[in-house]
Image (cartoon, rainbow, N blue to C red; front, side):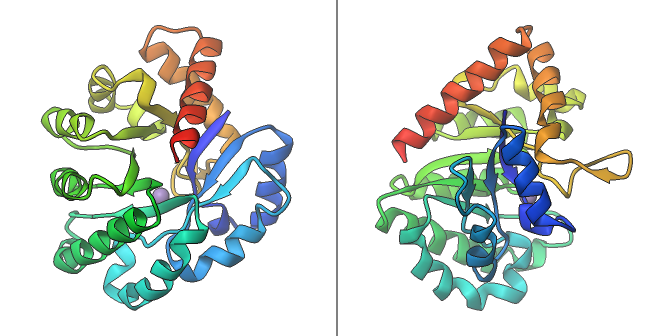
Length: 243
Ligand code: MN
């Protein structure tokens, strides 16, 4: 099982969640929201090849944490994945969009300088703007749009610019998400929980809850769950080998 976007450091007991994810055989991309959290969060992955810690600068924190970008840039050479990074154009964050775009460009440039990284990207309310930045920075690495919620047209542009997609419960369980999934290239898909932000029945989703998303996605694509799981595993291997 693969959880390509999970905030391990934000659960009440991150050590226990990391341990259980390893025991249950879930590969986890443990994303962070500020570079200050990276080294502490990396400790959760110590000794576990199945947890990779991504270096992040969340767009919704840019308004207060943009000063952390120097630290971010210094750490990029040591990180194999970057995330959560991106742009947020929703009403609460729209005010900082100009500053967010400056920060996102610095992220993409730093990634390109390091030879390109895999990036887990937030694009809520800003899919077109994210795609435009990616188009302007073709050497930044491989973009993975997490929880894509744009239009079909934006999806088409994202595919054209080389984006991958990490798909979670909010996407597989909504009509709108399912319509997008019909057009998403199957060879560029990973699964994600976005726990603990995404919840079921008032409880945060855990990395091993990815199983229900696998089942829904398999159903949506009329595949057997086992075939879906090996498709996503193959995708991850290909993604990791391109760096
Ligand atoms: Mn997230």
